[in-house]
Amino acid sequence: MLEIDGAFLPMSHNVEPEDGNLWFITARGTPMAAAAGKGAATRYVVSDSGTGLHAEIRGRLEVSQDRQKLDEVWNAVASSWFEEGKDDPDLVLIRMTPASAEVWLGPESGIGFLFKLAKAKVTGDKPDYGEQFSLSFG
Image (cartoon, rainbow, N blue to C red; front, side, top):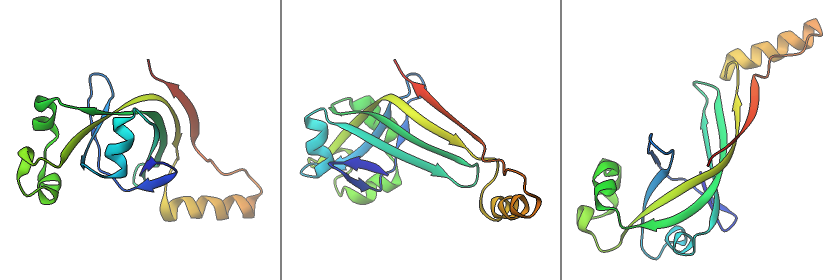
């Protein structure tokens, strides 16, 4: 979920492994495109209950004209939104440059975690909530 002006939007991201930038594709005229045009600060929240990973990533948005990057991140989901494909005049490529992140790594998720909570309640032990740490980029 990507935060734009205090509201969260469901967005798919692509990660650039070399520098950790996140890439998004959106339409011209959207709040996201407007925010990126101003270099707005944002937060991106990711959660994977299968692995127990939860993260809040903070950074800045900016519009990119990088045609090679668009070719790299283009996919079937994006093509369903833009009738003219990568050449659609409404398409806007957005880069999020991360500045910091809060990360939580849970030991388990779902039923297994609920079982551990119940067991801790019965035994009086503390449940294993996993790890939490902060990251700074750049």
